[in-house]
Image (tube, rainbow, N blue to C red):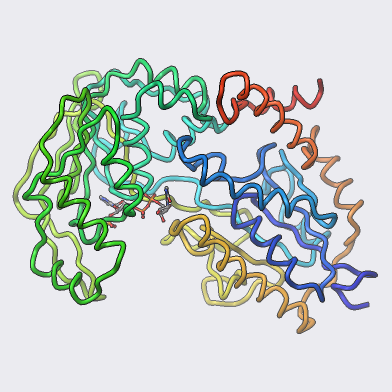
Amino acid sequence: MSIGTSSNPLRVAVIGSGPAGFYIVSNFLKHDDVVVEIDMFDRLPTPFGLVRGGVAPDHQKDKSVTRAYHKSASQPNYRFYGNVEFGKDVTLSDLQRHYHQIVFSTGAQVDRSLGIPGEDLEGSHSATDFVAWYNGHPDFAGLDFDLSAEHVAVVGIGNVAVDVARMLCHTNDELKVTDMADYAIEALKHSNVKTVTMLGRRGPVQAAFTPPELKELSELSDTNVVIAPDDAMLDAESRADFEADADRHVKKNLELIEEISARTEQEKPKQLRIRFLVSPTEILGDENGRVRAIKVVRNQLVRGEDGSLKARSTDQVEEIPVGLVFRSVGYRGVALSGLPFDEASGSLFHDHGRVTDEHGEVQTGLYCAGWIKRGPSGVIGTNKTDAQETVASMVEDLKAGSLPEVESPGIDSAAELMQSRVPKVVAYGDWTRIDEAETSRGEQSGRPRVKFTSISEMLDILES
Ligand code: NAP
């Protein structure tokens, strides 16, 4: 009996309910010649991945993409299995007994390290932890950030670093109308932070932040954003690259950087400095093992073998006294139990979304999408085309007849398995109850929602 027909629907499991996972679901809707039943898994009771746990609380507009995900989730051929963890509650071989195709869209959950001495000192944190903490992710809600230092360094000048810097600079009035976790609003209210220094290892042309995010920084109400005129100047190679390419984002960034560097400082309580061409070489601690300074070396840019400009250190070093360091140099994916994994890139090996081993051999029935596939780059929308490619490969494999037969493809048998493994499986309808409870708590205080930040609180709502 052919797979993908009404008598034998294609059974797909999607592991991870962030944007990449939801774009897998919506892309399948475009293939109306395939009858598919999709089960989506998340280890949390809440869907939407980084849209809930990563996107900054003051960027509510970006979170409105969940309306489209909600539409996908409302299709009769979609089921959500929240509070079910792949590798712990269900294994790869469990899933292979129930699904013809399994898509991994688990994102990139941990930070890349700098590999310098002092990274583990008290007061040195990964931006990924801080972001998950202020967004109320249950795994991070218990962390404690001592914000008593006046001077903070943020290493990296990507959009995550910008988010972190912005959260440290916002006023309490600005934060208390967002869906930032209550404990984080409270902690930031009592923060002593007065100066934030962002450290970029390359120059303005290579900066990873995007113009709207830089513009937002430049408009912070209580903070002077400062770029030293020397830092804003381009070296000859960068100028040549820019003139040859004339990328409109780089152009806009350069205009903003020039405008900021020409500013005179106003009477504002906080300062945010953006530095270019500096790399941290060591985080220094005091006698109690707490961060007291960050040592940086001045860089120059040299042309690498791939033609891009890379940072090379000079002999000019400097010590910046700081009491807190956030390392924001990119995320990396975590290996998935039973799957080959490329440790070097922190992602799965794949060919057009088909999971392969390190030699390129396709692992039949296994696919990937999003950051676990292509690495931590791009904006939410980038996952649309990414998922489109993966779904095209999935449908191609289905039509080629290359999918394995599965033991129990029925919807009920998969449901029974999950119920037997997890005391409380959270269905999509359950999530909508959690969602309503959060938004109703928010309405009382003029906020988009007040998040539950522990799994037990969420499950209690479902019991009540
Ligand atoms: P990212 O954009 O890749 O930026 C990483 C930054 O870390 C870069 O400045 C990079 O410099 C620097 N870096 C890397 N290794 C370093 C080292 N050893 N020493 C010093 N600096 C180092 O990563 P991200 O900020 O984590 O963001 C991930 C993705 O999410 C990006 O695509 C981003 O645009 C997206 N995002 C978007 C938004 C938004 O749209 N508002 C918000 C958050 C995140 P080099 O350039 O020299 O490598």
